[in-house]
Length: 180
Image (cartoon, rainbow, N blue to C red; front, side, top):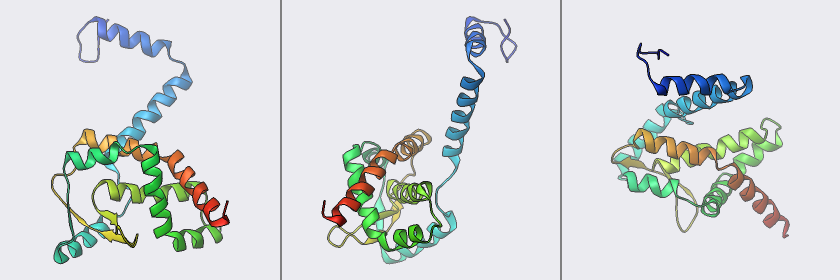
């Protein structure tokens, strides 16, 4: 059997058999997953020009965050419980805006998840933090190497897999306001 480069080999035969054995549904799912991964490599959840402007202001004021692979790894290795705590801080810091959006019926659940995931991405890149005493949002300029492509993919996978932690944080916030 000839592979795409014109050669022959058992790997090409195995790939051909694997594709033949896949159902149409499996092929579509695989294609979507590959497209999603490719999109994650390139896209940011935020407006890059706006964040660049914020970073320039942070640099002027000396508000910087040293970043390296260890910094990024610390985000990727957050447990769901830790991530839930971060999400609760995000929800608290942005409660007014979130409540306004939810009460206007302009948002659905996916919009809320996307909003929180935007904050998680900014945190993972070292561009955003919260003041330890006040919980207020702090914008920072990350100083150091940006995440490698592999690390970027890990960050995106962690953010994408955070929906259960986001949901748990929302439920806990609602219950704590009701006194349950």
